Figure 1 (cartoon, rainbow, N blue to C red):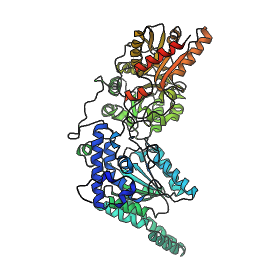
Figure 2 (cartoon, one colour; figure 1 turned 90 degrees about the vertical axis):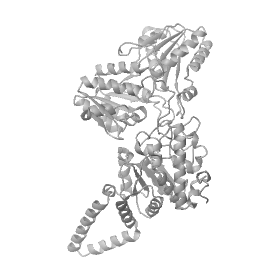
Figure 3 (cartoon, one colour; figure 1 turned 90 degrees about the horizontal axis):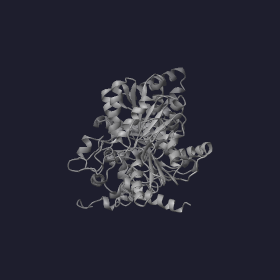
Figure 4 (cartoon, rainbow, N blue to C red; figure 1 turned 135 degrees about the vertical axis):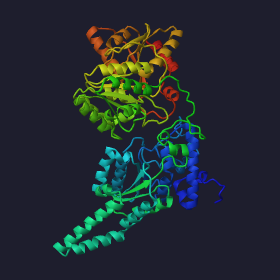
Length: 632
């Protein structure tokens, strides 16, 4: 193959890379990195981890026969190389765009994507399920999974490892460690020792010799015990995988995660093991792109950027201070005068705005890693101990701690504040990351108060309300970026909304981000002679009953929320209206619930996704006018 011919466009399926020499594979890895950088500079995405895992993915696909064999990704941040060599190179430029390819593995997108990933620490459970199904079916597919050093620290991964080791399931786990450096000598020695341990001849000889010596009685047993002690001490000295060995895995590593030949040879050797194998590879985040190598955290999830400088391109978003920044500043202000305030997050220190808090109050800040369940239960314990915990997480990840929210916090009516960032639709990360469900799953929990500020100034007031009220848990949900100015003001009162606009024809009861579109829709309706009453409801629970009673004096009540309709805010309004009809004999007016459908929403920017859901101001106005025209 000529040096000036690009290899990547010629790869249409994983089997194609098995025809390449190692020199050509290195060229392919370079081309893949160039395409990643070019595309992500335009679309944004998870660049650093994908740059670091190219050689690992190429080596895996040299060994397995996908889709017959299975490669399971954890989270999927590092899957871009996989996408390119499984027939998606031509459309890679549509990465994370509306109607384009997902930023994560997606079953509907390719037969080579085994499961829809996006949340951490679930790959080992999925891989074990595949391995058990294979064994029950009597087939012989190879099962491999790639999991990062952060994800493997999650509790779910430990639960899976416990059963994998217990069952001696035949599968290969690749631990992609990009948080440490590798010594060439240690790596080579570990690779050598790993090959010896995997050798059937070695295992057979060891077991035969030990059995023969054991037959010598007490003396023989003593010799075996001494030998075992020496073997264990030697293993602990030169191999860092004792923990995995004790869990029932054969451990190999660490090895250079950028040496395709070494990885491939190790993977092939692992296929001969009678049980689970964990291969510890060391990679460099951002490899091949200096700005990402120097600032891997910044390029973990990055927006469009200038390739030459690595600087982010100018965003089209409003220059108004964002919710996360506002939350951070407000929390710091309250913490300065209240030493009982502590902050907790789960590997989202920067994203949730808690870095400044952690820097200033290190003893009052707890980043528990990828362990959302533990984070919430920890908050419960801190609250019992007299502290005022603030748990800051993205909405999509707080879902993982639903049980702990109920049992360890709400059941005991503990004053834990949940700062739910990235609520609603979050754009290009798609269905695994949309915060669509928090309203529904929080309002169903007894003793839980659910707040939804409609702007950054409202977030400040919501936090002030939360810190002043300690009778049970309080959840405050807010999106990533402001949606525009909202005409609400004044301190928050429990279960009280704010009338933003008077009207007698229709009532728009809006929550959080939907207040601004509701006001714009009201302007459009006014031009049609339809006067709309608009409320910023502020509370998803408890709802403002007086506002609902006022809304019942119109011809139609419209609820607006950026969460799922089923089980969401609209159900609270409907229940309150039903009670009013019974207790006060008011008119039972129809309710038009507008929100997210009973479907998983795809990827795209806010305008594209809200238009798809029918939640843009012009769509709201048109829908309301149409329904009103049909009412008698």
